[in-house]
Image (cartoon, rainbow over all chains, first blue to last red):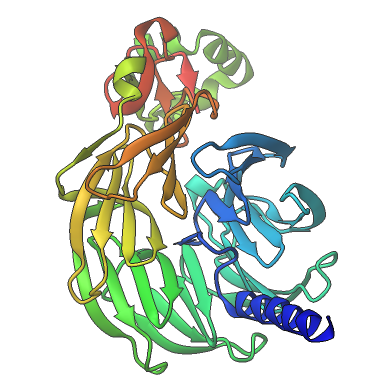
Length: 250
Length: 183
């Protein structure tokens, strides 16, 4: 019996390991950008509307079943799954929700900031939130910044540092590199090896960039006139691979 | 000064303004705060039947790119309000459009295995994308979303939607006389 148990245990551990090392929250799900309102995590589809978080059970993926609805206030804009948590960007701050055994969200904490547009991405013990001012974001005088929050204790996110930005629309992180789309100003490539001492690697001003997905050393950028793909195999220098033309990007 | 317009739009406001500071009205005639110069919009209507139709078409030009999504070798690009472009990205140096899934009012998307979830105005649709050239409706969750009866832009005035005329699928900039709704 003992060898069998050992083999089983190994199999379980191996499986856990391989899942843990994946950058996708759940097998079978794809990857969206930082401005997404829909996301799949585990056996649930999560949708943020302007005022709430709606879960759908998609254990049977062809038959989404209405799940828990959580009220979130107003100005809810983005959702980003990381580990067992959901990070929700709203115009007044960032919410952290834990996903229960069946994926049901439960409130963990809230980080408030000035009124602005603010997608969030997470890696390791840090959350990266960009705040953008502008009329569509209800506050024309708010600062344009990248906030780095320490979320080691998810119950008390702590603002560690703010970096000035021009007009951040979206962001993405993979390993050491953090990408911030600066709208009409361009695309910023940052070295986030030390989250509290982020350095600029490149600032591409020839692309008007709105959102990004970095994955497996390839960066997909929604630009004003096309979907751009870059390689970041060389961390010092983005290399343009292709551009799919688009009449305009919202 | 277009007083006839002003009077019609803001009878009470004008009265109040006159009572409070009639003088300033005349002094600052160049920039009268009571004249509403906000842009005006009119709803574009469609029928439930037409809106609830999802079909796979040949590849099309990307008009207004919105959200993007990656799944395996495919890249999905939302054409805001129109549908989803499915792009084969096996070779990122030359991404190739495979098809266009026309989904009225679509703005958001996510995928689990071979099922694509998209908003279709007030419904959530689950689409089988196993064959991207023949995307099939697997499930329609009706009335998943609240009907947003206002234009997406702020600081505008608009003709209030009339449910009798059908579903509002978009907004066009137009001269609207005395619009009663604003945002």
